[in-house]
Image 1 (cartoon, rainbow, N blue to C red):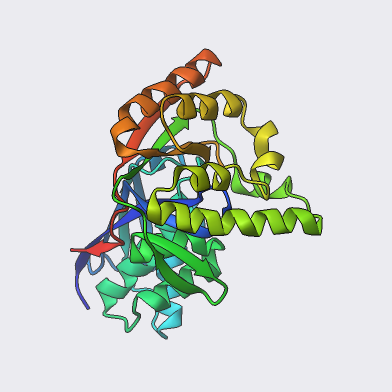
Image 2: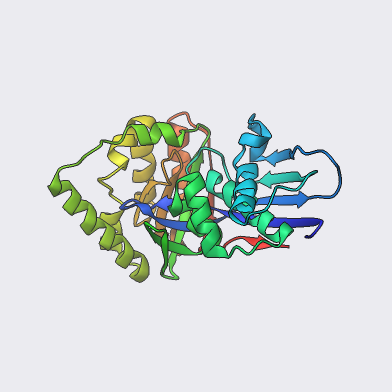
Length: 302
C-alpha cells in the first residue's frame, strides 16, 4: 500500500447528437485527486474540494469521489483505510453535461486502485463506474480516453475522429440536473422515429471518421433526446445556428446540457467559439467556451 497517490481524470462529452447514451469523447478538462492515508487514526474519510467542486455541499460519504473509492475497495474485497484524505481540484464544470459525475466516480476508484494496489484493470473500473454512476458513455472515456462506442456490458470500442475535426464547447452559467433532463424524455417512440435515429447514429460514426459534412449535419440533428430537452435550454436554437453559420458541421447538446458542443473543422474552431458565446450573450446568458482539438487520454496516476 502506498501512502499517497494522485490521479488525473478527464471530463467527457456524450451523445454528440445521434449517439444518445452510447457515444462518449474524453475532453481537455481535468479533475485531479490526491489520496493520502496513514496520516491519521480516525475511521472517517475527509474530503477537500477546490475549483468547480468548491460550490458543492455534499457530505463526504455521499460524494461520488468517496463512493467510487469505497466501491473499488469493495470490489477487491478490501476495507477503506482509516485516516483516508481526499483532496480534489476540478476544472470540469458541474451539472453542465461534461461528465463531472463520471470523472469523480472514476477518480475515486482509480485512486483506491493505485493507493492500495488493487487488482482492478481499466475494464474493471469501467464496469464499476458504469454500475455506480449510471452513464457508461461518460465513464468509458474517463477511463480509456479517446472517443468510444459503448454497448451494454459494458462493451467499449474505440471510435475514430478525423484529424481535421475539433470539438468546441460553449458552457452557459446555468445548470441542468441530469435527473431532470432524463425525466422529460418519452418512454416510447414511434417505430419510424427509431429508424431515423438508427440511421443518424450510423451517420455519426462514419461522419466523425471521415469528416463528412453532410453526414455530420444529419447526425447532429438528433431525434431521440434533444427535441424533448429544448425547453430546459433557453437559447439553444440561436447558439447552434450561430455555430453552423461560423463554419461548424453542426452543434448539439453535450450530454444532457446545457453546454452546447459544435463539431467543426479545426480551422473554424476560433470563429465558432466566438459565435456561440455571442449568441448566448444576446440571450442574456453569460457563457465560457473552450476547444478540445483532439480527444485526450484516459485517467493518469502519479
